Amino acid sequence: MEKNSKIFVAGHRGMVGSAIVRELERQGYINIITRAHAQLDLTRQADVEDFFRQERPEYVFLAAAKVGGIVANQSALADFMYQNMMLEMNVINAAWHNGCRKLEFLGSSCIYPRMAPQPMTEACLLTGELEKTNEAYALAKISGLKYCEFLNRQYGTDYISVMPTNLYGPNDNYHPEHSHVLPALIRRFHEAKLSGAESVTCWGDGSPLREFLYVDDLANLCVFLMNTYSGNETVNAGTGKELTIKALTELVAKVVGYEGRILWDTTRPNGTPRKLLDVSKAKALGWTYKTELEDGIRLAYADFINNPMRAER
Image 1: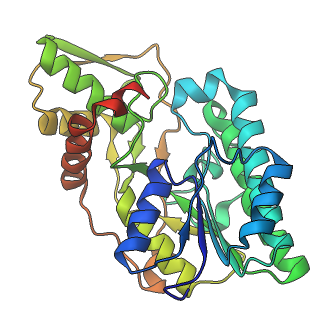
Image 2: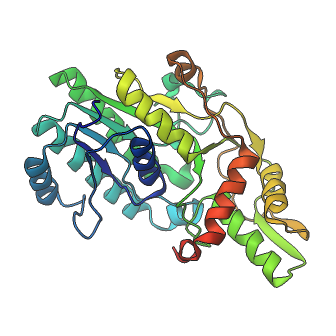
């Protein structure tokens, strides 16, 4: 990309999209196009086609998505599948029809089989059954990355896909029911500290292993890949490090300053037992993460307490 290239960041108000905009601006890109949902509903095909026909972006970061944690995914399976498939197909197809030079599709590590060999390589895609608690979202993301691959193979486009591990950081969703595990823990422990609660109850038994990547590190990788990588195979984005949910809760409690007891509700689902990405491909391309987990949680907590409206989302 040139510094004055016309770059469209879809989903710029979300955690990932806003981080990509920050990274592009940090690196000196000056022609960044964004549209709020009220201005452009990406699930409406005609509107997306009109936008691309008028703006003709040269590069597209497709970070827009309907996202959520276990509760949100389980309670709105149809919504997660429909909205994500519609918006990604509309954007990818319109980019192709309007001569977009390169598109980068953002997916999720949930695309990999529930019991995939650990750590999960890019090659394990579609080799086993998906985790049921987020199957709809995963199927939508698999469809998006496969559409990029098929366009490359059939029409010679240069569309790439990035599959991040669990993300956290500025502009996250801290909704008490619809958020992912780390931001949910930040809010829960913060409120427990303020109320003087003697204990906090968490879902499951704390045994699942998870990996977490600070969102600004992902944004750095996204820009790096847009400038350096072409290929049909997706690229994993992560740290290559994992910890149990129990260890994560203790770390979040420490950062927040909550000193009460942590209890576990084992009637609640654990989700996938382990989700660790093999990040050797990104490393071989010349990229590694920068932000360690405790440092990142401190930054995320500062974002939460300094932006009270985040808690209402």
